[in-house]
Image 1 (cartoon, rainbow, N blue to C red):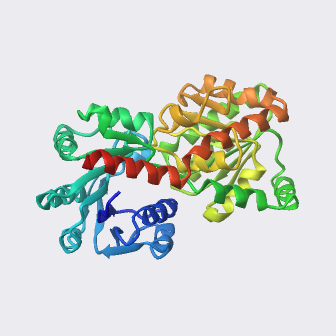
Image 2: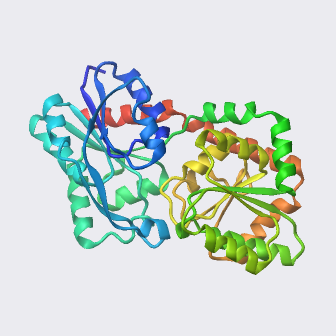
Image 3: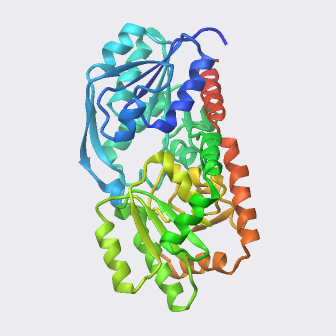
Length: 387
């Protein structure tokens, strides 16, 4: 491919994107640059913003949230992303290709690069479910942006369906926009000494099967439904343990639910640094995330890289692509707590060898989602845009 100055506009700078940016910098040496907010809110983003060897430009700005509906599972978040420095950066570098995340003021700015002949690619990760509450006005703007974009990169099946609903032809959409440092997660998990795992299991007094969830404790993650399902199993004298990694405003409510329902084997361990999460993968037998809406849950992908079977929800955008019912896990409707309890019960009855086989299948499936695959998706999208 001929040299093509490429700018990637990304307001958020999560650490899991770093390997992808590194791959893209290898594809387009000296021609790839990331433009991001200089003052991200999350601790891990602040750590990541200086990491990696690729070129970057940081601009002042902020995301002004108008709605938190994403966190309570009721719909699409609403906000305004202000960063006046984006436009000067585009004018200064005059890229031939602009990649931009989702639909925001940054996406509108990206379209201005078309005035000098640049092609605009949109990475869209929303699903028809997560974007269901977008109003008529915002939807009209998205359709306008979709018509002007040269190509799209999406996470998978559910994200593709949403972009197609905006009127985008299927041949302008490339799947593979989300990836994971699969090998890194696996190495961290496997490097944990058995003695550490055994000690943690004894400390928490865990029984098998041990379930693990890793998430921010907000209503939108559906943990209340998981606890209700466990209470159903406990009344049937089916034993399980649950380890909850994460903090959030719902923790006190969830702990009170455990006391009210007499749940004895639920352990809230609080926030754990990202690099230590794979240790908890080793402690667990099954990973559970009954989210009420997620575009593509990184926590599920990481658990798969550590070799865990998965129970997740129909509202998780990665479900159709990464969770094969009966092979490496199950997809449930979390509000149907009886069904949810029966699914957990499958693991309570299964031999440990069977659970391990399902975990290996998880690992096989996630191996396809390395950063190299994501970079290849962007390269293909650029080829679509420039042909």
